[in-house]
Amino acid sequence: MSESYSEILAKADQAVAETAATLADDPQRPAYHLFTAANWINDPNGPCYYKGYWHMFFQHNPYIADFGPMGWGHVRSPDLVHWEHCPIAIMPSPDSYDAAGCWSGSVVIHDGLPTMIYSGVADMTLWSADDDLPPSDRQRIPQGYYHEFVLEIDQETQCIATSEDNLQTWQKHPANPVIPAIPEGMDLIGFRDPFLWKEEGDGRWYMLLGSGIKGQGGVALLYRSPDMISWEYLNPLYIGDPAESGINWECPNFLDLGKKRMLVVSPHGRPVYWLGNYANCRYTPDGPPRRLDWGDVFYAPNSLLDPNGRWLMWGWIREARPRDQYAAARWASCLTLPREISLDDSGHLLVKPAAELQQLRSATLFDDGVSVGDGNPNSLDGATGDKLEISLRVTSQDCEALGIQFRRSPDGAQYTQLAYDYRSGALRLTRDKSTDTAEVTVDPCEYALNLGDDEALNLTIFLDNSVIEIYANDQLSMTSRIYPSRDDAQGLRFFAQSGTATAQVTVWRMGSIWD
Ligand code: FRU
Image (tube, rainbow, N blue to C red; front, side, top):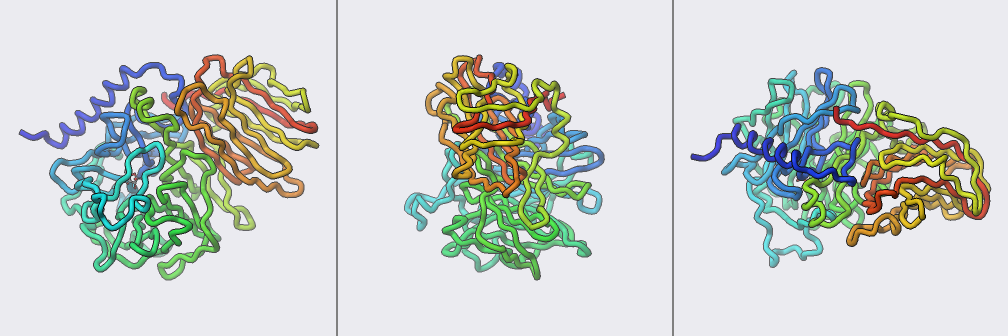
């Protein structure tokens, strides 16, 4: 007899628990970034706030540390800082519209009832190599993911599930799939990742689906529904230029930031965004797309308008070590810290870590003004660690470059460096000395940070074992990975080149998010 759906869920939870119990104490595993207790995680899904808890769901393969038939994992938090693992929310149902995967989507509270909308994938059979798209144009899954696939378009549908017990268990709706096919007459590449919102004074749900129009470019398709069950296709919200944003978009997000609307898409490479205007169900960007994160492992972000009217965003942080290494570790990937997204008075995008994260500061290891110059770096009173928040605010400088080394071994053989070059304006993360482990990605990450006339460099760096998140002057985030191979690579060093600099530096040890 085939398994019941509740047996499928129980088996998946058990697989995670069993693997989690055997996980070695892995020095690369983060302590304050969201992840699954074991095995594979990718996109953040359905962030929401309900009855005193923040909830985050995510793409999850409970069985191995690799992509596979995806379910939705689930964690929740009373304060956005401390989290607990919850039972797996949904898993594929054999022989059905989601047999091969419950892919990314959203959670909303519809008429008081928590309702999830996700993309059901019935079959993952790939287009054959002699299909009409050359391999280079196929949907490319970002590096670290290793799967390159284009699904048959009739295998992706949109499905809903509801929860009557505070989001702990979910019932797939009998009307599924609520969107069983692509809009008539369209020739699309991909059809997935619903993102929902409401317009002021309009009780209906609006939804974007990520796709691509063959021969045109990536597209966000706009739908509307009064009840989450019957959906009307309206029009493309916006079609991108394929030279700028690819032939297919995943995980569209649409944020009302007040003066501007922000469209975010994940085009199988670096996620990009536009700022622009929305009227009559169409979007008009102000200009070309811009990169959202300047690191090399950030993908498929998902966002939430929280009860305080603040937009929060999380992304998937991929691995930068090879598949055999993370498969052996039996865990792979995590999510970013929550980032607050807003506009400044002149309409520029601001990106900063959510203020709640300050609660994770468990001890102040260093807090002082520090002066450095050529041949005179400063190791911050020997403050050390691999789970730190570092704040560095330049108070005066007369140098060509300055920066900080972290995860530095006492002999200086191993370290990672973040430096700002005042001549070129480049903020650069270099990792060529980060590890001795072969095959780990160590390419530099760089951002052109233009400081205003009187604007001082202001860096916030989160180190969480193999995870690095850098924020600079509220202008940008840079998310990356390092895999230091030496136990003693724990030190810090602030330095300046060709001149002198003074900065206010604070270093906190960070606690764990798991109670
Ligand atoms: C993005 C993505 C989504 C899809 C999900 C599958 O990383 O490919 O388009 O819904 O991951 O896990």
